[in-house]
Length: 622
Image (tube, rainbow, N blue to C red; front, top):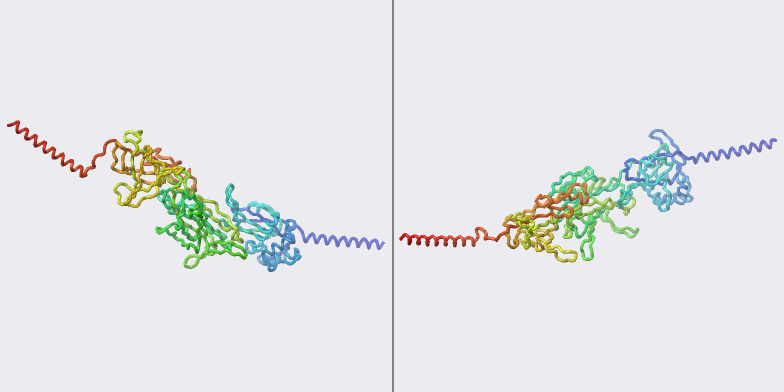
């Protein structure tokens, strides 16, 4: 009986020991309560994808108040794919000199984490520090390469804070998603890593690092209002009639500007690419290659203003070749393809070990007498000119010019870039159609007249006549009566003679809005040649603001000539005017030699007639 009780006691003791061991094991690996991930400063476009490489098995806190220190024990999240073969690969990416030795155990992982990040006060190992970001990137790179399942995908900050996240150590990637329907690429803005527990949620305040860029064109004669603001550049006034819409004559050099911002997290980058890319139709606009200038404008200067000498007020001019490089895409015959780029930064040459392409590094720029470094909020401002070509579109949709800014979007890879949304501006040009008609009956159309177009009224000193070329059809044949404006001839030299040899109508395409003067140098047969110039005022109503972009329908809404109703069509860009002639023969001009001789001869005839009459009367009286 004693043996039975001894056996029973032994069995109970064994069971108790086993139970104790089981309970201890369960307690050591108890599932901790979940916590929250709270991210502030995110925009509606920011989303977050995260992985949990480590599970927090336990935590213990020593000390109180500000002196409290929390220690965490981690286990590898094998269920999430972070096994004892994957975790060493991650660790060796960020800490190759003191990684963990094989075999990889949970205890070694916990010791490495504490050694790598240093003492932790519960805030998540300085979650926004360089080490925390580097570790997060290593986790995400390996996880994405191995196609591991994320703990969460493309969550907004609001969605994350509203959800419970299992206790663990997280690596999170912030991205800025493009607007629906656009071709913009996703922008990698930030990497975050840190602990999540019920007692200590992961709380991070971020700044959006997406670069902003805008493009503007300068209007040369409209009454635009200086000091207007583009909503993409809050607190910045854009002056000197730079806006989204302008109109010019063919042959004019049209001024453009780019404005790009230095991102909020510029300090997190060791290197940074920053490349303006511009696209235009070379038949419509072509870059004046020596006109490019690049400036740094400090963040505390709120006005984009150009001085009379062409310099940017408050800005520092950078040096071509040293601080930036202009690259113009050319055909084999050296003609422009219509695209060019401006890479801002100091040159970093290509290397072969490790293989790396050459690039321009914005971080390398210093400017001014004090060699000031660029800082978040500063702006890069570019100005250049493009010549309006003979192939320019008349009227709508106008001649569109597009810019986007390529920039580094990954603090750990300078070659990892994204682009800002494309920004477009539009340049309009117009056509003046003149119809030669009888002054008494406009239904009587006249042909055979010749004209010269002048910049100013008759008798104006140093007046200039227009240079024109004959328009051609798609097969290269000249179109009678149709001309394209190419610029003003120097004062004192002849311009181009126009002929309305194709019926009564003649056309001049490629004109800016403004006042023009038409001289009739030859009248139609049977009509008088007018002594004065015809004044033609071409008026276009355009949207000179910061929000139109290249919307042609709102950018150009009306055209008139001499303010006459129904004298223009905004869609075609054509303004129309009637040029009148009076019937009759041309007489010698007053004050000429011919007139003097006629007067003298007439006086002699009258005198002789008078003498003859007097003689006749005397004879009768006799």
